Image (cartoon, rainbow, N blue to C red; front, side):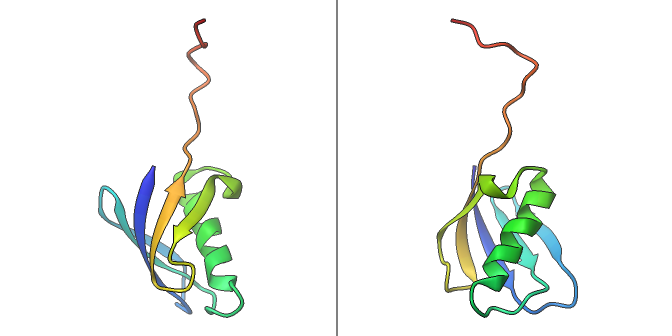
Length: 83
């Protein structure tokens, strides 16, 4: 799933606000120095979508507030694969 994210670094608290189906505003409680805000953004989104951090990747916008982020959602293990 591809989502657009607007990031506000150095916020008082971390928060995710869903604006539309594929657009989110995320407040990050880390400064935008040395990639710390991007790392924290991945942690916050992983917690929000209930996936591992490795399943969140920033495709565009690593140095801007507007980002394009890919979220790989978990597959359901309820249905077995048919061959």
